[in-house]
Image (cartoon, rainbow, N blue to C red):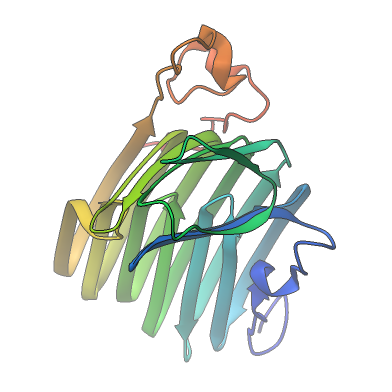
Length: 300
C-alpha cells in the first residue's frame, strides 16, 4: 500500500524550463568579444526568486524522480532516481533564494577606449588587437537540498549532482538495501571575471565569494557507489579531482567543503563583499543569505 500516491511516480521538476526570456522576468548579460580569430563569450542570468519544496513518500511500488535546477547565478542541481519495485521511504527539503543585483561590465581597448556595457553586446573592432574585459557581478544566491532515503527491494538507482560556479559534487548509487541521508548547501554573492584577449592568446580568471558544502551519511548493500568532487578551471577542465568507487556492503560518513574568499580590489573598502563571507565566522553566519549549518552535521 502506498501512503502518498499509488504506484509511486514523481513528475519532473525543471526550474530552468519555466524561466522566460531575459527581457521579461530575468536580468542577465550576454557578452561576446573577438580579436581576429580569438573569441570569448559569456551568458549569465538570474531573477528574484524564493522557492521551497518539501515532501515525504512512504510505500511499496515503482519510483521515478527527476529534479533539475538550472543555472541560477552559476548554481545548478540535478537528481535522477528510480526503482522498479520495493519498499521506499523518501523525505526531502529543498530551498532556493536568488536576488537580482548590479553588474558592472567594462571593456578596455588598445586604443584607450573604455566601453561600459549594459546587458548584451558584441565587441569586435578590427583596428584593435587587444581587449580587456572586467565583469563585476553581485547576485546573492543560496541553495540547500536535504534528502533522506531508505529502500529495500530488488534495486534502486539514485544519482545526484551539484555545481556552484565550477565546484562540482556528484554521487551515484546502485543498491538493493539503502539508507542515505545527504545535504548540499551552496551560496555565492559576488564574482569578478577578468579576460584578456589578443589575436593569438586568451586569458580568463574568475574569482568568487562562494561556499559549497556536502554531507553524506550512507549505509548500502549493492553493486556500486561512486563519489566525485571536482573543481573546474575556466576552460571546464578539472584542476582538482577526487573520485571514489566502492562495491558491495559499506558505510560512509563524509563532509566536503569548498570555499573561496576574494580579496578586495585595490581602492575598495574591506566590506566590498557586502555580506556572506565564505568563512564560518560568527559575523558571516548571521547573514540571511548564508546557509544554516544546522542540517549539515549528522549524528553518528
